[in-house]
Image (cartoon, rainbow, N blue to C red; front, side, top):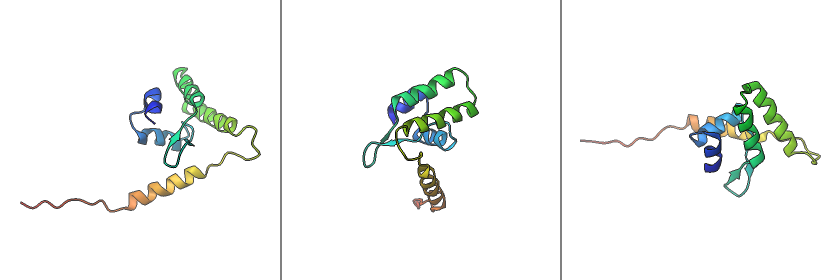
Length: 105
């Protein structure tokens, strides 16, 4: 994740995942039980589009093409259940009561 943030200029994990939810970055590839990564070619393609001044809509089209290319040679369509799971977790987190420490003087 650090390499992706450095390469793209995203300041935080949250900004990367916001870009994914907005369709402006590709979904991560699981590389371990609790680790994800992105193909270098996808990161470079998105950066090149940004540098070229492409609009958000054009970048969304590029992201779709990159997802489809990732699935090339497979009989399956690109699975978007990652978005559904991520959105559900985000909603659950928003509903949690924040715990604070009571400080008495």
